[in-house]
Length: 211
Image (cartoon, rainbow, N blue to C red):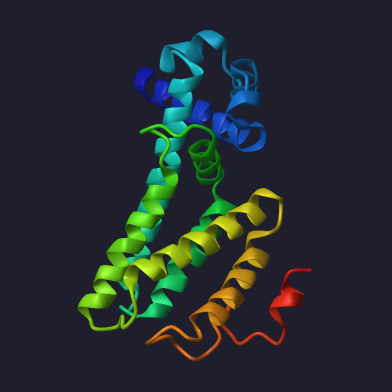
């Protein structure tokens, strides 16, 4: 019973801290705000996490785990072609919109570049593994490093839009449209539109989707 209560308290603290870090950033988050949001005492917080830095590490670990597990499941079901690269990016954006721990981990990775705040390396590692599968299946005719760099740049912009408050579904549509444009000249790229989330062809232009 005591262990279950302790696990519940720890989970509540991580959830509350993720929300604070996502909204206020590392510097703007106070332990007092976290305890109030979690509904626990400061003593309960320091029992589980000695410092704010320890709490940030736990939040990052949660966001990284959620991201890794979701992308691993997705990659296992994807065909080894360039469309799967787009699908991976769209799923990562979905996670940013749906999971507060993922958004917090992404923000902390930008604000605190330490070995424990490395959310971006989680999805880029999944991307590299996917590109290896595509190359092994002879589905990649261009340079994998160029495609990875393209993904990183596009995802940086998409993440910035999420951080600015744009709905994840809207950002997914924008990203799918941009992938269609940028992959048009890439060897082996699919010729149909790469839209999201319904994957159907869009009747709107990329400029329309930005408004």
